[in-house]
Length: 206
Image 1: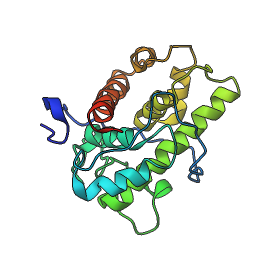
Image 2: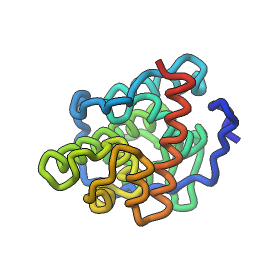
Image 3: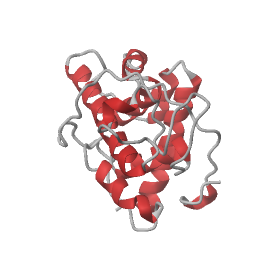
Image 4: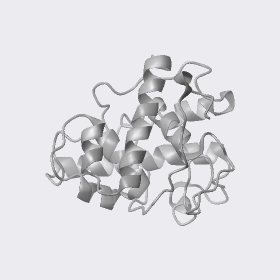
């Protein structure tokens, strides 16, 4: 049972990441515009105190991944456990695969170090969102696509795979986009992160 959200939200087994990155450099902080209805910070006490500043910092990199989304992802990925290792070999609080970790970290950093992993998570989230936004501008994705939902799908299954799933219009609700994802694990991941996010935003956001 995760203790950091009210209403007794119980998270099931960790979802392993399929992190097949296609990016080399993190995007600038303003690369992705905020989504309507998405955003807000976290009140003190909504996440473990030792991670709060890291979540805020990671959540300031782009509008598609505000602090509440960063926190919701971490809860789903590892339950805030920096030592977590999934059955697929994903490591640390943000669950990076060893093959993906070097693309988003600095030399010598460890995915088991939350100070490195949470910021790497923010960089990777925003790079995916930037790629999805570009695909939308170029007509390869529907203009109405929810960048945060697309980003989450990309984090779990790989950006290219997620983009292929999301080419048909789905609407503005995350559940509608999740219905388009043929991989049950990723569809479930997107729904659960959004459920966590909504609780963080409604109960703790400002």
